Structure formats: structure tokens, C-alpha cells
Length: 480
Ligand SMILES: [Zn+2]
Ligand SMILES: [Zn+2]
Image (cartoon, rainbow, N blue to C red):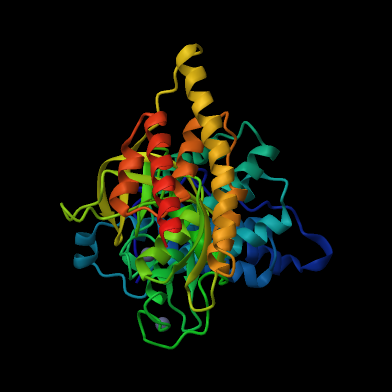
């Protein structure tokens, strides 16, 4: 039974089929055979125009058997396939409940239309019709991007073609609409450790992917895959980032990716007034020492610092209040040796002090908002001359003091090494503040005394105290 396909939906450029030319084909075909072919085409076109599309297809197919590779036969059959596909696609569900069209589906027909269209295209790529047919087939297959390419190529051949221009307009809308629909954001691209979009994903040999920093953190606590517990013989430090996965994420979720990036950057570059804290001891500026970082939270902190400006604060817990003391000292990591087991061996130099305004926990370690503090340096004049004079005298005293101490420490190699190191670090006396701190490092002070030295904003007062400490220690030595 023939179905009737109502022409409710028109396809751009598929309003009608082409008539088969009555031009005695000559040598390749007998007159009777050619007559039969023409009859089939006439019947086909009649059926098409009366919307008996499946009958039309039957006639065209028989004609195609007689004369394969004819662009008109193929074009007309293609148009019939397109119409059926279009009809089925836009048929309201209620209609199919009343009149089920079993065995017919829009995609199959669009696929058949595409095959015919491609043959037509190969036969006459210089005609706009070929492009119109192919573009319509691709649109019905929802291959909009490809359809647009075909339309563009067609318009290069026939820039004024109305059907192509219409197609161009309608697909431009569809295409941009489709493009605006974001790919479904499922949790497929989330890290199972931080539950956020993967950032710098590393895929383990067991096939699981995690953010690089998350895997680091997890492996600080053991070398198993956090998901399947497979023992991992990899280091996140040397493992490459999964480039393909990263590209997919970056391309599909650009906004969330940017957010993740800025989040990551803010951890590695916290900003000039934010300082990650290593809570251990009170440090004065002008010191050089070594640190062994083994606690997981500080390993994480050091990794982030090393990606950033290599600076952290050294602070202490105020025993009276139980919270972080109000002053700290910034240190720069001058050498960082990561050990195979995840620990770090650091060489650091203390730079400048700061006042801690507030501090909070971040992934187990502390971050402080700080203000940088400097002694008030007197303006040019008597007061400054006085300070410089005092500094120079203190320097002379310090040189002699070190010499005496070195003599007294003969045989004590550790003490001697300390004194040599201190001697080598002596700053210029033209920077009295820096000098005063250095002077204070010559003797071993209690943490509370060092904290006071950080709090003082009067250079002279610091020099005075440092000298007192040195004299006291000198006397101590003599008394011994
Ligand atoms: Zn993560
Ligand atoms: Zn795994």
C-alpha cells in the first residue's frame, strides 16, 4: 500500500524533480528500452508530485537499473528519499500512533539520499543542485558542520543561488544554536580526589586520572592509586600530563578550566601580601640554613612554592596564646632537592620580616596575610649620621668579637663553621637595619627574644640589644 506523504515541510531547493529529457539516446540503448526508461521517469515524477514518494522511489530505482549513473535519475530519487526522511522526522508522535510506518525511519532514508547525492556530486560537481541535495541529506543526518562546508562550496560555484542562500541562513542558525549548547557536563572529567574538573591530569598505569597536584597529595601518604589501590611505581613529579585529556577538557569546558587554572595559580602565586607559613621557629633576616621537609602538608606547600616565587614565611606558635605569633620572617628557597621518597631537602635564606595580620588553613598548612615591616630610617642629617656611626662601630666590634670567638672555639668544628658562615654573611653597614639583624644572629637567642627583635622598629635599639647579647656571651666565655 502506498503511503501519502503530505508536503507540510519543504526542503530548500527540493520543491520539484527534473523532467527526463526526450532526446533519442542513440547508440548505447535501443529505442524501446529508452522509451521504457522515459516512461518510468514520467511515472516516478508523477508519483513524486503527488507525494506518493515510496512509489516514486520504486520507479526511479527501476530507471536506475536501466541506466545507472544518470544524474537526473539519481537526483530525483535523492529528492524522494530526502522528502520521506523529512516527513518522518517532523511527523508528530500522535500521527505515528494512528498510522505507524513500520520499517521506515528518517535516518535510513537520509543515508540513502546522501549516497545518491554523492553520486550526483561526482557526476556534476559544477551544478548547484548537487550541493543542494547533499547539504539537505547532511542536515537531515544532523551533520551540520559538514552541511555548512557543502553549502559554502556550492555558493562558490553559484553565489546567487537562492536555495543555497536559504540553506546557508537556516544552518547558520542551527549551527550557532547547536554550538551554544554546551556538551553535557557530567562528572566524567572530574578528579575523584578533589571532585572538581581535572586540572593537569595525570593518568596512572592502572588507567585512572587525577589532577597532578591531587595525585601528589595522595602519594605523599602512600604509593597506591587512590581509586583502585594498585601500587604505583610512578612519581607525579616526572609523570607527563595527559595531553589529549587536557585538550578535551580545555576545549569543552573553557570557563571551568579557566577557573581551575586561576585557582591553581592562586595557590602557587598567592599574591604579594599572602605568605604560606612553615611553622617551626622564629627566624631573623640574614640567616642561611637547611630544612628537611617530610610532613605531607609541607611537601604540598613546598611543591606549590617551588612553582611560584620560592618564598615562604617562617613562623612560630606563640606559647602564651597557642596561635601563630604576630611576626614572621620570609625565607627564600635557594636550593631544593626533592628526594625519591617525596621529601625535600631545602637550603633557605631569610630575607625580610613581616607582621601577620591574619592567617588561615589551606590544605593543611597555613597561609598568612602579612604586611611588610621596615625600621624607620632617619632622613639625611644628624640622626642618620649617628645611626651610621653606631653601625660602623658595631661592625668593628663584631669583627673583633668573631675573631675572639673563633680563637676561643678552637677544636669545636661546629662552632667554628657557624662563625665562618656568619662572618661571610655580614651585610654592608650602609644598610643598618639589615646589619642589625645580622648582628643579632651572632648569638643564640631564645625564640621570645628573637620575636622581640623582629617587633622592634628602631634600628639603634636592635643594635644595642645585639651588642648586649654579644658582650654577655663574651663574658660568659671568659667566665668559663
Ligand atoms: Zn583533583
Ligand atoms: Zn587506579
